[in-house]
Image 1 (cartoon, rainbow, N blue to C red):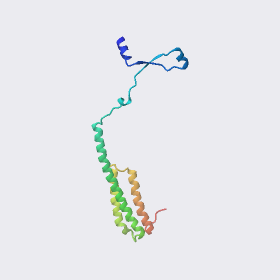
Image 2: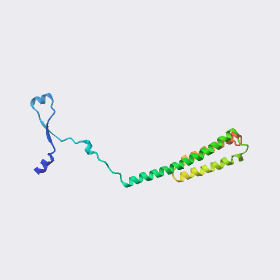
Image 3: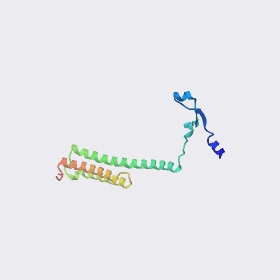
Image 4: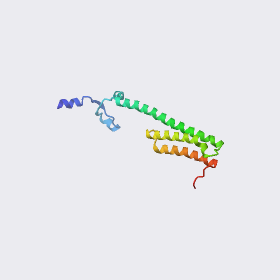
Length: 151
């Protein structure tokens, strides 16, 4: 019992206590102080687990895949919007003149829906982008006098 008690106090050393002026007149008291540990020795490096490394690789692959899908959506939308901008200078004479643009819109809708099904775009984001394309087409028709929106 005494040996275990002595071993638990073996790391302690004695040091004079910090006393006030009145305590200093009475004499110095001894206080047990534990030795200081360096913080550098306490820090250690944890190696990455295999599953976390694989997650990093698969996340990077998925990021590149998602980036390609989003880029395709943006490209299709841009094609539709530039085609519709061309009609602002020379409005279409009939709704049939917008057939090539409607084909581009259909392709854009397919790409957007595919991105939603693969989890690249949220369904509300897809709906907003499709509505933006439909609204742009409708604005061209209204400007040409071929369509009157319901009030």
